[in-house]
Amino acid sequence: MQKGKKRKLRPAQHQRKPGVESTMKPEPVYDNPEVRGNGKLKDKVAFITGGDSGIGRAIAVLFAKEGADVVIVYLSEHGDAKDTKAIVEETYGRQCYLIPGDVSKESFCISAAKRAIKKFGRVDVLVNNAGVHFEADTLTELKTDNLLTTFKTNIFSFFWLTKALLPYMADGSSIINTASVTAYRGSWHLLDYSATKGAVISFTRSLSANLADKGIRVNAVAPGPIWTPLILSSFKPGDVATFGSDTPLKRHGEPVEVAPCYLFLACNEDSSYITGQVLHPNGGDIING
Ligand code: NAD
Ligand code: MG
Image (cartoon, rainbow, N blue to C red; front, side, top):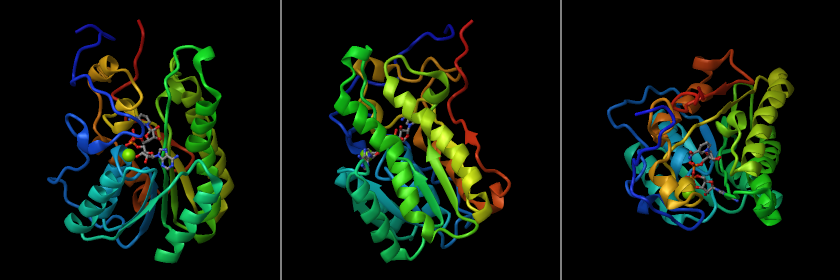
C-alpha cells in the first residue's frame, strides 16, 4: 500500500444530519470493557456537549467508568442519548443528565448551564465537544447559513457555555475543547469548519492564560479521522468508505481511542502541570513526499 493511497475500509453509506450512531454499519466502538476504571474522576461532575454519540459518548462512558456523573447536551438524537444514559447508569452506576437543545443559540447555552447547576451544583470538567460541518467543494458553494451555523456551533458555543459555567468551576477544574487535525492541516472542502477549529486552538491557548490564576486548566484535543455519525452525515458515501485510509496508520480511529486523551486532561493528578496544550489522536501526520 503506497502512502496516501485510499482503500475501502467500510461500506459506503450516508445519513441525514445530525446522524445517528445506532444505524451506522458497523457501529463505532465507544468502550473497552477489558479496561477497568481507577476512580480517577471519583464523584466529579462533567458537562459534555455532543455527548450522545461519537467521541462525546466515548468520553461520557470513560468518565463514568472513572467515577464521574455526566451532563450530556445534544441536538436532537434522543435514541443515541438514551443509549448513552443507559450505559453510564446501568453499566457504570453513575448519573447521566440529558439536556437536548441547540448550542448555536446563546440563550440555550445559558439555560443548559443553569439546568446542570440546579441538578449538580457545580461542574468540575467542561468538555466543549459539539460540532458540525457542511462540505463545500468551492468557496462559491459555501452557503452563508451553513457558515453561520458552523461558527456558532463550533466556536461561539464554547464561549457561551464556558462563560455561563465558569462561576461554578473551582480551583482544580479542567476545560477541554475539541479541535481537529484540520486546524493544522487545513481542509480544501471544509474551509469554514477548519477555520472554526483553528479558532478553538487559539481560544484554548488564550483562555488557559486567562484562567491560570483561578487554577483552572484549559486544553484541547485535535482528533484525526474518527468513525462517528458526523462523518456519515457530512461526506459522500464513497469518501466514507475509505475514510482515514490515507493516514500513516492506514485506518480511521474509533471514539474509544480518543477518549483517553480527555481523561488524561480531565484528571488533575495526571495533568496538573499541563495547560494551553493540544493532544493529537490522529493516526499520524500525513506527510507528502
Ligand atoms: P457526532 O456527530 O457523534 O457528535 C457531534 C455532536 O454534536 C452530535 O451528537 C450533536 O448532538 C452535537 N451537536 C451538533 N450540533 C449541535 C447543536 N447545534 N447543538 C447541540 N449539539 C449539537 O460526531 P463526532 O465526530 O464525535 O464529533 C464530536 C467533535 O469531534 C466535533 O467537534 C467534531 O468537529 C470533532 N472532530 C471529529 C472528527 C471525526 O473524524 N469524527 C475529527 C476531528 C474533530
Ligand atoms: Mg449525535
